[in-house]
Length: 194
Length: 245
Image (cartoon, rainbow over all chains, first blue to last red; front, side, top):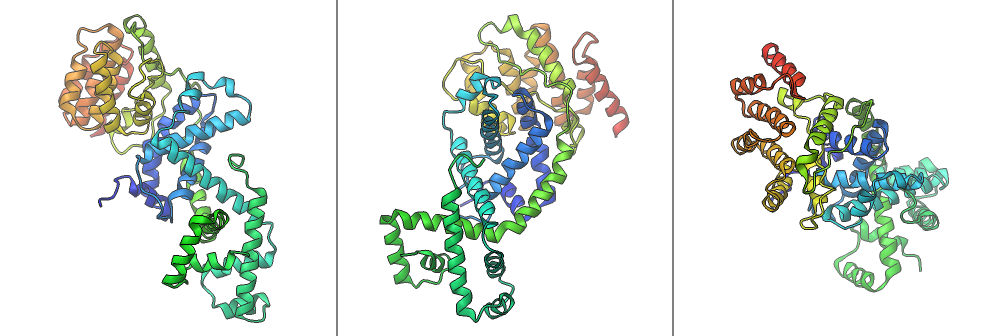
């Protein structure tokens, strides 16, 4: 099956390809800048929004294989920006300043809209996981980070963290994971973390 | 019973085939297990990518400043006229000029890229429901000119007198290197109302630039009269052609 031509942009975000990331900005920033300026925003808002949307795409698509690309990168990026901007205006109670036609038109679901919603949800989940990760003990944070990095043997991790043996490392890992997951459930409310 | 360890074994590929099959069967009937799996998958993603993500954020922060610069005015979106397009065509052209004037030069690999800054397409005033014109706008703004072209062809078939829609169709074709078709479209405004003709004349010149016909581009630019809203921009491009190569 042939690869979607825009796959290169998703890959560029994954591997930090400076040339292609610049191409993303060069191709897509103008439209988003103009759209934000038309909807009660400033250039700084547009820059922040653009970056935030790219990070949402990163959170949803990079390093994951549970998706098939169905829309163009540019359309997805534009839709995420619009969706996020409406949320921000809404949070600031400036909805009235968004053209009525704009705010209602985009309620209609398009393939990009659905993909944008999904990307934003993934980003919200990652942001919540990041926040509650800091609520774990230092020992838990170090343990989970060290195990994931895979640079040290389990015995070395046990020694570094003052645990008795490899078995104690695994038991601690499961306790820390369960605690982290519990914290996520306690703190995550869909749609309120954007 | 806490599922943490089993999910961990599943995600790390430590289960044998039989255990994996049992686990996946259980997933289809145990909503909490499926929910826990989704969270633990996200947790693994977070741990695996936090350093890379942080590096990407720093990288984007560095690049973004080059492309988003404060502007004095946001101008006005160019509404595609409904049926009375002739009456407001001059306002449309005026808005287009404002947009072009406030438009910053972005780093671009070519002279064409430097000058081909298209005002966003706005079909929001259209009352036609099908196809979805929001998709057309999104496609145009995001550079998906293939999709925008397809839908604008449908639109101009329905509303052949809509000059601005035809102009944007020409822009799509120009961006898609269909410069012969684009040329015909832009030349079709020869007898049109002045403000639309100014617009088309400018794009005719850009189209020649895109096609690599520098002489034709010069001719088109030189034909843009001082009264045209695009005169200054045409002169600037002529200067660049004189000094740039």
